[in-house]
Amino acid sequence: MSHSIRGRAGNAATDEVMIANNKKAIEVGTYVENNCPDLRIYVPGRMDKFLIDQGVTPIKVVDALLGLDCAIVGQSDILLVYIPDDYISGGMRIEIKHALCIEKDIIYFSDVSPETIKHLNTCINKLKEN
Image (cartoon, rainbow, N blue to C red; front, side, top):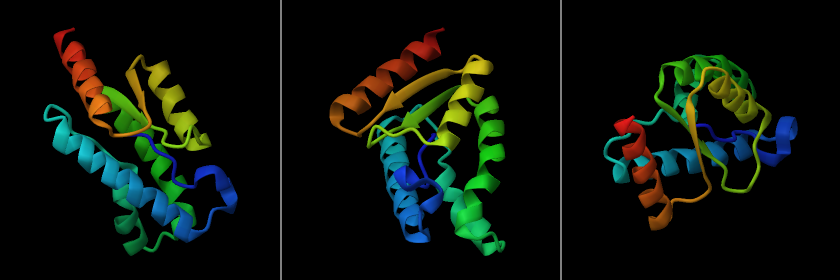
């Protein structure tokens, strides 16, 4: 699941902003997983604690994850793109471009309303049929 880590603040984002953005993405990813039983989701923000425990500073976590994220997109069936504030970050653009280049299906969503979850499940089921 592609999500913004730094948000609109970009390179000026503080550790607190990035932690809050990741927390929200983790919550959304977990909710989607719990409500879309046929979907396993990789959420980059879940890796932060591991990377920080390895000595990577939060501001460097974004760069450390991006290459890994693209590799994971390559092994995934689809790319979910979570855009709660209509903002697609530079890192998200890289992940999306990578998915397009390797012809992965992309599903964009901005909330986890019951309608969105229903739509996600419908899209996933259609992809499974193909």
